[in-house]
Image (tube, one colour):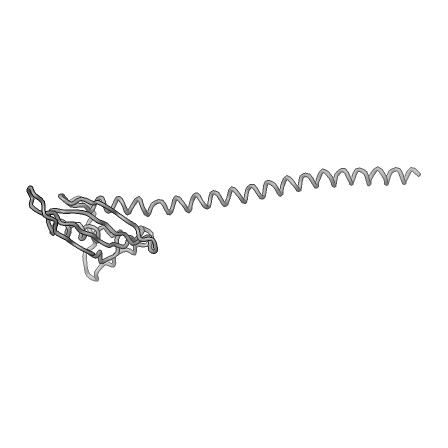
Amino acid sequence: MKESAQVDAEISAAQQETARLHSVIQQVQQFEQRRAQLQQRVALIEQLRKGQTGPVHMLDQVSRALPPMLWLTELKQDTKSPDEILIDGRCLNLTGLSDFVANLEASGYFKKSVEIVSTVAESMTGPPGELIKFQVRAIFQRPSDQKPAAQKPGAPPARTGGN
């Protein structure tokens, strides 16, 4: 009888330990699920941060490319190809437009060649007499998409400031 009572006590202790371990296992599973959710959130946030740099650089480079006496009226991304942008604006002469296109291409952030889609001269009553309405199409390339410019064989290395 003593052995039976001892075995019953061991079984009872084992069942209590099993119940305790079962609750610990449930807590661990809940923590693992929460950790997986948090990792997914962190990955999504990182992906969004990386994607954020494209539009910021695009607008910055367009702004830097603006020559004097040229104004932008609209900048649109193509819905099918988000890297393709259409830029509408006005300028006083075609030289300003040509400088704008050259500046965009020289920035390295736009694939060559930037296309002038249309130009229309609009008459004005006062000076300068006419404005040129234009539309330009460009394809933006993110900094990570850029390939370093190949140096010509035998060309001296590029200087980086100073004399």
